[in-house]
Amino acid sequence: PMGNGPANSQAESRMPKPQAHPLRLPLLALVGGALAVAFAPIFPKMAMDASAIGPIATAFWRLSLATPVLLAVWLMARFLNKSSRTGEIKPVSIPWLLLPGLLFGLDLLTWHLSFPLTTAANATLLANLEVVLVGIVGWLILKERMGWQFGAGGLLALAGVVILMSFGPEAEEGRNPLMGDLLAMLTAVWYASYILSIKRVRRRWSAISVILATTIVGAIVLFISAILAGETLLPDATDAWLYLILLAIIPHCLGQGLIVYSLASLPASLAAVTLLLQPVGAACWGWLILGEALNLPQIMAGLIVLAGIALARLGTLE
Image (tube, rainbow, N blue to C red):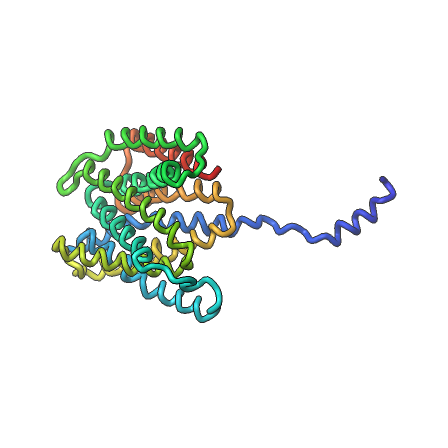
């Protein structure tokens, strides 16, 4: 007992000391990634304000300008470790590989169309309802287990959506908040479908390969959509080009990259809740940069939706 003190102290001194705050860096990366992705609705609005470019064209440039960066990362990964899962591992049918890109292109199509019609906060918040939709499909079709939090969270989020759409921004010239909110909700449907398709494709393809293929296919979908819609593809102002480059680098490359990096080290429940900073960040950036102030009912409705999404996420992680 008392006589064993020095021996115990020596034994403890030889034991490896636990790393201090091992989750600090991944958590900071996740927070930074969520706040970077929150710029996704901001830069398109700024580009459209600075030039005559259309919303679909801004989505096209987001993916097109990000493609060279992702391609460089993909080539570097294959060069550094040719035997790892950085490239395609097993043969897989081409339609399955193309499907995520098609769905992601449709996701950005409807989301960017909502930007001129509603606020950045509403567009981002309603698009995040994909959590509830993925959970419903996982429960009904994939037979995944759900906790009670999922049902409660889904109902809470739905109530928040009703309030949010009832007390949304007033209609102005060129703005239709109701249509914008509906397009954002349709975005949630496309994004939920995209997430489900990724689950299948990721069984045989690496993350960087899937992201690169998704970006290229999505850009093709958006290019065709912009042409069919008669939009102007090339912005006529230098400022607009700057905003489009920032759109490709900050939300798409930097934001998504930081999130992917952090998810390897963080508990799923912590990561899922932390990612709710994205709609909060979009609301803050929209207020600070675009002057899109929120009224009290919108703030309360947004908090209700966030709480519902958080509960739904926790319910799918049991």
